[in-house]
Length: 145
Figure 1 (cartoon, rainbow, N blue to C red):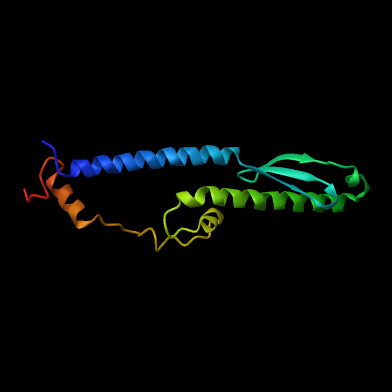
Figure 2: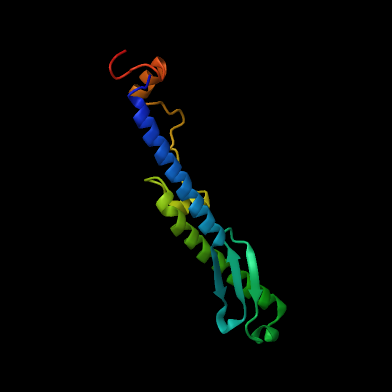
């Protein structure tokens, strides 16, 4: 015997499968995401991956040879930081459409989002769902028995 809720459940499962597929596609695109930054005077170019990991460091000109080591190190650190900011912006743009309403993707990625208003500590199912759970999937909760 089927329940009137079966159609709702199947629709919800279909929506869930669609979301899983979209998230897998977003994850794939995120793994492919990189960003590069070049220092002034083309001293150094840094390339980072989606998680900010350093993928490459190039010295497009010989300008680095004329710099004291401390200054070159400072330029490298600043250039890597710029590439990381750029890739973080790209990741934010990539995941923002997947975020539920009310979520600031940049804040979520930075770990500074206040989720307490969006995710309750003790969520309760809707009354119709509670009734359905009490009666069991085989019963007709809408018809009253």
